Image 1: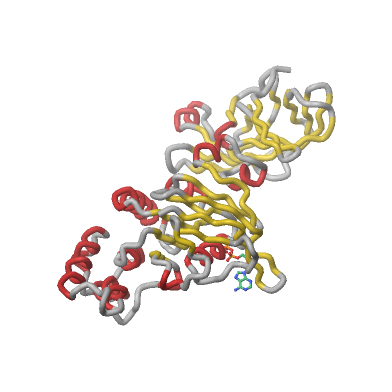
Image 2: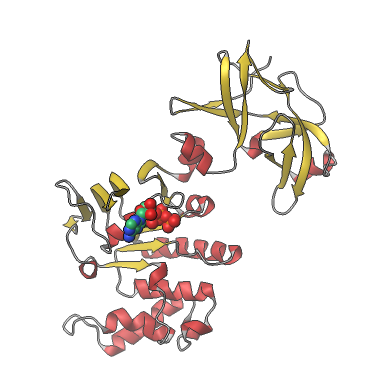
Length: 362
Ligand SMILES: Nc1ncnc2c1ncn2[C@@H]1O[C@H](COP(=O)(O)OP(=O)(O)OP(=O)(O)O)[C@@H](O)[C@H]1O
């Protein structure tokens, strides 16, 4: 079922938590709500769930498919949700937790106890907890508890699944596993899912589309690829990954900052350029267009790439470069190595318009 929001806003007293927003989520889509703390993600999710009411303005509408649910109680919206505050009931076994929603259904729509049992077993199989059906939540790991919460949410066969920081409290490796598992489950069962996260990597890896929010506003809605390649503004660019800043003054096509120089095809005046860590090369000497002397202050060789922290007198904050293991060895990088940063490209945001530039020769 699709989810459509029209003019949904929210005030808490005088605080505007959400500016009126429109949002269309297609049937079967997996959409991530991404933004810093306080940007309004949870408020939006709670309004869709029916746990919070939107500002009562004439045009405010929430539609699930063709069904107008704007004024429906949470119970009647028929959605599944996994919220941190709705963890598994501690005094019930995993089986009873998953069965709970079915056992409290009104008698005329409630499945028979045999049907409930087989449905719960199927769900537990799906979330790989079939051998733990008789355990209590306290006897499960955090990841197993989250899978149990998901099974409970899915028991009522919702068309929409809402998840608020579903993997928030788990360690990095378990998060990774659960992410992949949720993606597969979503594709297999084909419900429409909306999840809240403040973790960029999680949003980009898991979502068909990501809604980037800040200050109660939607900054951009796009596929992960489009967001990364074509950020709508500086906020989105900075929020989606590590960024190095180069501030200086341009004169005659050269940006100068202390003893650093970079050839740029920009007008004279003050400028700030933004550079991603993987867009920086490290070289033993300066080039014709870039003279950016730096000193290595920290190295982290864990993972597919080597993260190198760089400092210089002309830098207000350290830079981060990511280089291949081959380059790391070729350049004999250690703390204290002095060398040059050579940007492959840089970005610049002016008048809220996105610009991507390749460096120019001087
Ligand atoms: N019940 C409430 N009463 C008053 N203000 C609230 C209430 N709930 C949220 N807010 C405010 O609304 C704004 C948005 O909060 P919300 O919880 O939606 O943000 P969030 O993006 O989910 O943040 P986080 O990632 O920290 O959970 C914040 O400024 C918050 O302080």
